[in-house]
Amino acid sequence: MSQRKRSKGLGCSQMTDGEVDCIPTQVERHSQDQVNQKVNELVQFLLVKDQKKIPIKRTDILKNVIWEYKNAYSEIVKKADKILQEVFGLQLVEIDSKRHIYILVNKLLHAEGQHLCRGKEKEKMGLLLVILSFIFMKGNSVKDSTLWEFLHLLRVYPGRQHSVFGDVRKLVTEEFVPGGHPHPLTEPPEFKFQWGPRAEKETSKKDVLNFVAKMQGKEPAFWASQYSEANQGTA
Amino acid sequence: MAAHMTNAHRRFLQVLMSNRITEGSEARKLHQHCCETDKVYYAHDKLDDFISTINSHLQPLFMQIRKGISEDDGRAHYAVVNLAETEVTKMASDYTEMELELFRKTMDLIILSENGFASSTDILNLADQLKTKKMKKKEAEQVLKVFVEDKWLSEKNGEYTLHTRCIIEMEQYILSYYQDLAKKCNLCHSLAIQSQVCESCGIGMHLPCARKYFRGQTEPRCPKCNEFWSCDTPGVNRMGSQT
Ligand SMILES: [Zn+2]
Ligand SMILES: [Zn+2]
Image 1: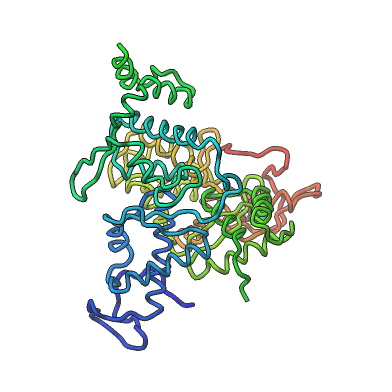
Image 2: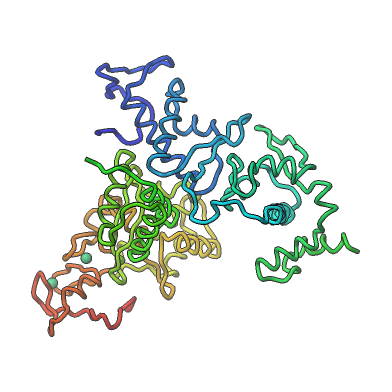
């Protein structure tokens, strides 16, 4: 119970299971107490990121929390996930297995929305409209992490079966944004979403802007550059 | 010994965390809602037990649901506090170095003030003296607005004080950092930011505490020196920021 708070690195005075270690080596085994302390730090780290709805990269976990405990990485992550589930009702989910990006998803069912909605297509179109609006208002292209973050805010989690939308990642990448061209940016490679050819055909920027304006209770002309762009299309 | 957590506990904790700060009556409603949603035992007078179950599971993580009293109206509030971060660093991930410096200086002004308030003019005058980087007044105004939105500060007629959330989360830090400069309430012995101060002996009291203490007394007298209590304490009217 007497864990020390956040210790950056191992000091000489710190005991590791009865032995005093001045120069920790990579292969050093860590005591259970130390591992547990890292687990607690990781839980806090993940909660902070989740509060801000920032997807979490594995490299950030390594850099900010795990440090010299790399050899215990999977043990620490597993234990942190267990605590998140048992205490907070949250689950650590990898949403991008290539770049190792995680988010926390809520395991508790919401009082409503447990059953499948009949107007499933309608709901899907609603989500699509929201996504297209987001891309348009953000200047016609967004990084995929930005889009996932935004959806996370709406409690739509790409890593998990949604009761209405099913596999949201698949829905978005394979159904919604068929023209979601991958754009390699600076390292690490990021992908961008923009309106695909189908979206260009089936909806108009003008309609989308009108939708946004209605949601925000403003005139479409409030967004000057979007307004002129939207009206160019119809001219 | 520690009772086990149910989904009702988890749900309650989740909402409390996303609220940042939750007023007492809201917390009681939430308690009922969570127990009903997850179909677990509910008793309206068992909120404290419910919370202490959660706290026993938060303790190894150096976290805690803490109860604090609003200095304005004496109502209870709850917040989830991270005890591992004792400094303003709990704000570090949300703000820039420059914004944090402005916050620290604002906190100095508030804590060292007579009545627990700092005027916006005084705060804005600090903006171009920041060591990190000078800040324009316009910028500083914007930053103050964000601190109010995020519930670190609260504002009344251009005067700023610490929000109840800030006091709940930072009480330990403030008491250890400011030591004797931080006033404590003579009645409840916790940190007092906005307080009434005895003109003769200098002890301070929270307004809600003083109100309770003087209730029914015709001539309010200081609980320590027994001199006449010159501040105007009524439930009637708050004295915000005269003098
Ligand atoms: Zn008091
Ligand atoms: Zn006195």
